Length: 375
Image 1 (cartoon, rainbow, N blue to C red):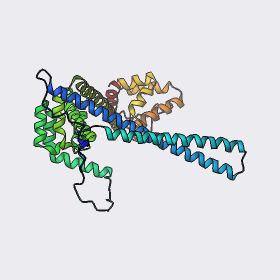
Image 2 (cartoon, helix red, strand yellow):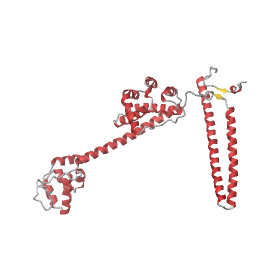
Image 3 (spheres, helix red, strand yellow):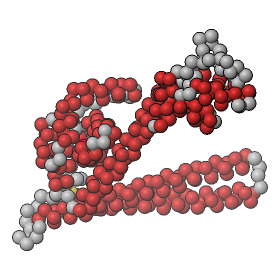
Image 4 (cartoon, one colour):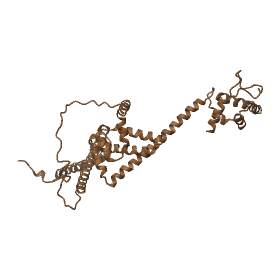
């Protein structure tokens, strides 16, 4: 005889059509489904807590029994051993309680009504050989090459999707190009957003950012459902087009947070580029001694700066002759090493005590120095 009593209590509310005309059928089914899902989640949570509690109790019991055995071997005081024995007895009682709770939970599970999520389970769909598959994780270089190849092959489609805005347009385009529903698309859109922000194309960045979050929500939905993203993107658009305020708020909050992250990343990239540019320009300015003429000019006394500003060689020689010889040598060496001052053809640097030396003043470098200093 077949026992058909298991079919007496079945919850199948998602596709019932027999409702009162004044009742919003879609909302009613949605509430019923949500309530059932919440009950199942609560049951799973209770199961996990029981499993965790029983495991911890068993582990603690094993540790105490091990300590008790060690004390017996070491001939420790009886009071310590008796104390551990009491703890062992208590833990054994707790272990029995956990076992009883697990048995009660199993009984509860058997009495729970079946529903569309538990009514049937797949038996088998393929043959499996007892061979452990080799899992080769991709290296960073392989991932980078994979991303580069994907972008080169689909650049036109990626840009087109990034420019869409309406839900229906996005859904149709992904239906026509399902291969775009993947991590590579999301990664490309993120990079594109940062590039647009660096280029100060703010409005276009916000548009592409919207499509980036659309793709990321699809990928997250696929992870939660444990399915291929291409199999659930239509489900996302169906949900977003009829979403309640809470879901739309979550989407918009994530979009705003993403745009802020893009702006911060673009700011960091711009600052880094400016530093690199300034460093390159500084290296180009370096004189024969490896010093920066701008830095050297700013370190000179005011009277020497005036000489370079007016490009008056006689004024410079007079100022040097009035200075302490050691200071004069130091400043002139700085000027020569930075290229602010080019010695005469004999290669002698002008010194305080050598007023007759006629140094050659390089006007081109000075003008460049003045422009840099002004900027």
